[in-house]
Length: 404
Image (cartoon, rainbow, N blue to C red; front, side, top):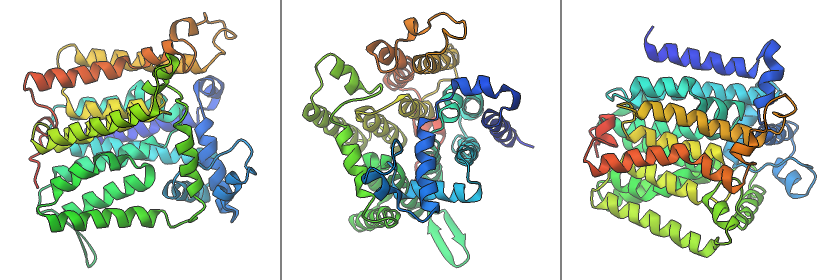
């Protein structure tokens, strides 16, 4: 049995233990945050009963529950709950995707020194165990589709997947994966232009691939049409008041947040990244990670789980396994996880602990926000330093030949 399979099984086993902790349930539950899990489970239940969860939510009949996800995401939860009508069915689903992610990391990094360290970090590290398991989040699936795109980009340009009489070229698979990711969480839209440029040898192919991408996104939005439009109205309204640990929230606390300026900054940052890609200063892997970072950091309701995706993205394209770097990555992972956990749990004092929120700050406070970025600052600094010193980053580190 190879190491990837062992780590997949160990990672899955650890996650199942955290979902079904047995006699340790009270201790595990103390650290969990299942607010979003309730918002995954409720609409799935409503859909199973034949009701329209979007209509129920929009009409105010859902109480404290929301159906604030795209229809593709909701369909996945409906399928999970149809097998076992329990919130833990969705947690098991996320655990299975986490195990798949460990396997995908092995494929993406098969020729990279990052392979085993990253698989161990993902399987056993606090960043994923807390942010994706104890705080059950759909970002696990976002990472699955992102890793899949990375893997497909490493394949030979002549690669063809055959399924019965169907043939899927490497480019088609990349576009399908990007379309599914956009239908799920829209993240791939931020790097769609450079991705299309990378896989399209001419204008005709560029247009064709763009049409396929659009068709996939539209197809994923057919269920419950048009009632899901309330989701986008709700999320658009949320951007007016920054929340959680977004940079916008920090600026807002200082009275410096301006949504128009922030939107202009997003556009300028993306254009700058696109220009670096066009002039071959960065490769497609770096481009994807940088666009993900800009898109997520711009989001006014970004939380620590979103930030962990940004960190994982940078860990894919920079060598963090040499010197003191692995100790910093692991140590700061524990730190930012502890800050998140302590800031959202007020029961430590009742349990006989000191008031740890004096260190972490309350959730959403300026103190807590600043402390939450320690790991991101470190890995971004690794990337900038290695880029400046002309060390291997991106595709060169992954070992990809970057076929077009």
